[in-house]
Length: 209
Image: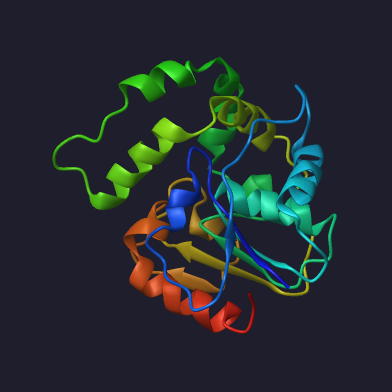
């Protein structure tokens, strides 16, 4: 059994660089979609093959990575599904972001990456977010923005746990059921609140890897 960690939109495997686990984990950096116009279902099948995800493996997904983890679990029997700052239904996304999702494919992501710089005074979490964004695959970011609003979601999973911040503006906590609420946690809490999230992951996945 393997434990796979999926980063969020605009993030890379560096998202988990501040975490130390006493067991092996598998991280990934998102490649662009296998073909134009594919949906989350086809992309997840692509990831399953590329990442070598097998029945009985477990997944941890942050934000968009949680959505893809849900989609993967519909195609492969996943043992444990852990979502951080994520959701199981597109309706959990903030309504304004849903309405603006059509703009995603038209944003000049490559140009934004070239000008993005960590500014003085930024928190370490936001500095890392900027650095990861500069390295992200723009084809993937553009594609993911166009697909998120049409995602079919996940109806249920026998072993799903959600870790969520009560100040998350992307997936407001009141729009869904969560198992571990992080007081004051925002959408970047995977970086800024490691000391609270790591023990939860160790308790849940300590016997795996």
